[in-house]
Length: 159
Image (tube, rainbow, N blue to C red; front, side):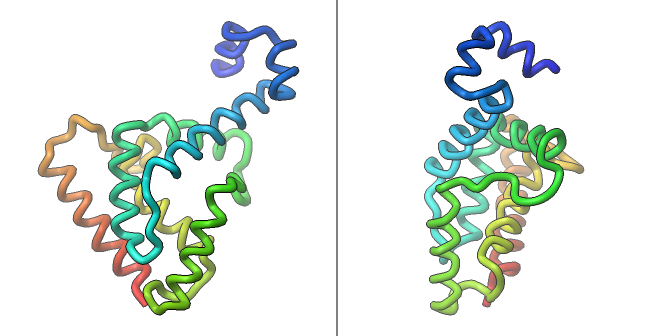
């Protein structure tokens, strides 16, 4: 595998095993670090999930590496179930539950809503099924996608 060859070039196996347990452990650590960075970079507001989705879309245009890593993780190592159980998720799920209790967000499992909004935000990402947007796409196309995403998420999560 290309990823394993890259690890072989960066560090010897004893170092990788000592720090991460295995090459897979190293990969998991990289995914966790990149996920944490993305989730810390984009401010989360459960009462404005549509705005958050657009901000996530913009961040993945600037930094597509996480989406690529997660796509590989899903395809190769975790084809079913929850992809990660990241500590950054729990406060967001709690915030969604609070927004639901306040009547700002539709009822339903907070994790399901979180997953839906993320999937919508990543529609045109590097792992997009139909079209992968890039930062050099015409501004008018980027704005059209942002507006469609915002409106679609707002409707999907409306009470």
